[in-house]
Image (cartoon, rainbow, N blue to C red; front, side, top):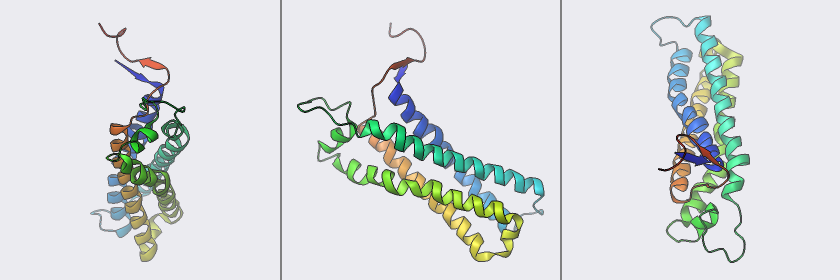
Length: 190
């Protein structure tokens, strides 16, 4: 069993940073709501606040890691231009998608979303984390600010979810391939 270097980085980008971020979002939404509305069964402690700060900082790191590896590692391989006269476009995912009318929209809509709207994910969760770190438990007293933190976290989750969906579909139809092969198990096919 093996994988190419480009396939490995695509896996790290999507299933590593991206999927972990999406999983963390649900926990963040529940905890932010619980912590900032005061509807918990017991009063939040300083330890709870420290944990949520660390949790949000981890989410910020995951979101930025997903966007930066996608933009600066995987995306250049996706946009690689095929030499004139190339018939097999398997190593040129963007051109492969655009060469068929049934898959062209995966690029024109899906990748455009990932290129532009996907950046909203780390920006919005960074804002939410900054506000929570700055205000902590006092966020309960600022209803509009609390609502903004919750809504920006939801928007970050939605933007990441749509970007993840488009990424999975694009990778299904035109995977980023190539580079040195990494052997994961065994010595090859028998």
